[in-house]
Length: 100
Image 1 (cartoon, one colour):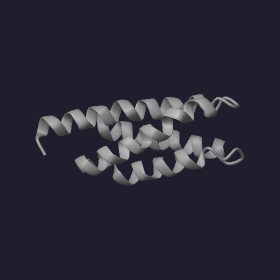
Image 2 (image 1 turned 135 degrees about the horizontal axis):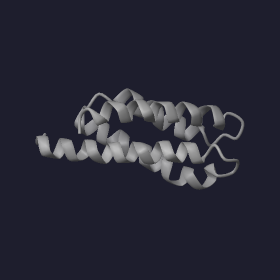
Image 3 (image 1 turned 90 degrees about the vertical axis):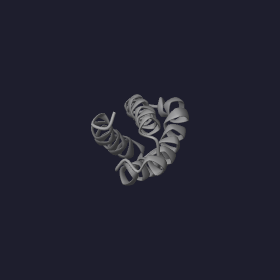
């Protein structure tokens, strides 16, 4: 893959991770996850595709984030998975900052 393309994809993934983390944090407000989840799940799937394409070392954490974003729709365990998803997003953000 062209280094410029990889860098652009890493930047897109970094911005998406910031959006995911923000969505998880907004989702901690009761009933707000119904709104923020509409962008968290699609961004997590987009990040999974980018992680597969770039092989940038975030694939495992991104898979975990996709699973957490889906499970966070369950009302009782949603808060725990949103906290976990926020942590995973921060780890990915720190990893991606080194690559951009």
